[in-house]
Length: 367
Image 1 (cartoon, rainbow, N blue to C red):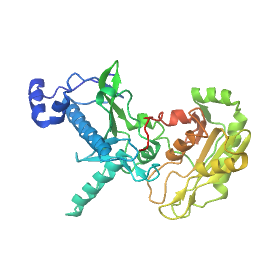
Image 2: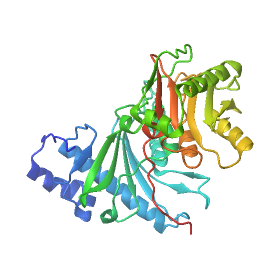
Image 3: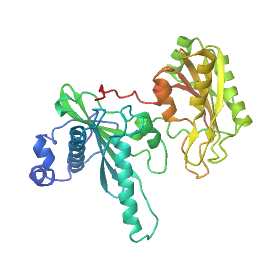
Image 4: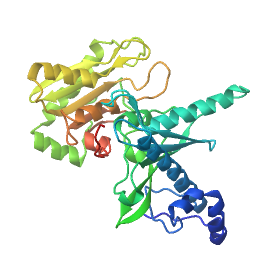
């Protein structure tokens, strides 16, 4: 979809200003006025379009520098993020080990940088309430823009941050470059389009098996995996019963249970807190239990989650772990794996592929 631009500035005047205010657009030789926009119902004024492209080019420069400086994974990403007060901050992916175990993506790197800048400004006078909300996230790769093909999709670790509600909301916009008909375009996505179930709050008080709704893809997956409604109900009951039995989340107070269906067997686990900072996700624990019993070749057919939306801080961080879903999708599940949620008004049976965007893949080698 191409959006309707608000012509709130004279185009010729804007072209002249771009030479002074947007030096990277001039350097890269990008015709921003005629650059197509692919978007999810986003209204972007022309002057804002110039600003976004310039900020993305700043991030592109940073990503290239990160590779030239010796990023050991030979993979470079850059991000430029903006808060609701129009403050910006850059970030590159920071890889501390060869296997990426100790690393942070460009998006989170930029967000942390911006947060610290905003907090420092607040610390100078400490008047009023400290407010911090991410408005824009601009993402780029360390490749020539002519080589760009598909839009970057945030990884599951980043999406797990975006799925929270303290610093992100449905209106947070994510920008990237992509090619359409071999033409470089600006892709604009609302966060809600990447996380369509972000607003679907789960219910930990009631369980009504008479109100189960299935998406079309879920029905196809049930046929593919040979799963009946009886199997679905048993999996939901297992997660519900496990939630009532155990609560090892006595520090965060967010009790969450997950049950998975492997072959015809159900494995359940609860969230476990170690300290205020460290905890174990129930979905990964349930998966580990199944692997111990059945070996590495397991295939998870369905997942049911039940529990508390909030920790004791009161922020709705969600019952489903985005990070865990992304991890098991890599090896023991796939996009067709069923995902069952007990919502406020009904139970929804969907799939991982409908809950999470398709993972962005860029080939790279460790040097």
